[in-house]
Length: 329
Image (cartoon, rainbow, N blue to C red; front, side):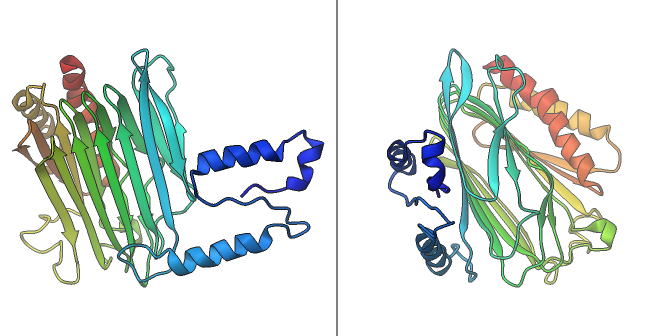
């Protein structure tokens, strides 16, 4: 929406140029000029909102909510990764946080004006790391999943091209009482693509007395390497059907994390041994590591504290994974 077109003559703005640019950037998607003081374009906006709420159902939900989208693409110039494009809709914004502009690694943060995931929310994310590009993608804060009558969902598609690198360790997820959330991540790795991928799930608002009072939580992650499925992880919890605190479940712990690492040029066995030794020295956690096809491995960690897990994943990736990634690139 291009608003306040009545002010264009006073600021030397050319509406013709703005229309041309809007058509180019929107690429066939709708846009409108408005002057709300005289109600110009107002009914076009109202009609669009009504259409979205009636026709724009989130996939897999029964609520009438608009899909929020984030699309990120990169390019390489002079051996430095740059942001080629970043398309985002409310409530999201993508910010570059790289302090050293000469650093070869592009650092982006996903920011949100929403307090968290609300009933009916449906997010679609797409990240493309082009050939030889390097991207570190982070989040702004803990992701709260609020109480809901229906459900919310998120889909994330990631493509890492030849010799590309991505590190993504988001803040912990905090599912509130009676929340229902389903997410699906699909990651495609080309030749010598390197990946560090983290996930942390809490029991809920533990300090408020909520432990595993959410309805359902599911996060599926599929990783394809050169077109072949090498990892499929399905974290599914339904506390009313199976109490996570019962024997044989989380061993009395309330928070869990996973860290996935792929680097076909690295000595994965050596990195795994280093991580095992590092975690063995940590108190009040339980962990396990497993090698995967495609020269990778997964670390699973249980704890009572989400911040501890978050810092552990960052330290592991920085101390061992990034070191191995740098030496093999």
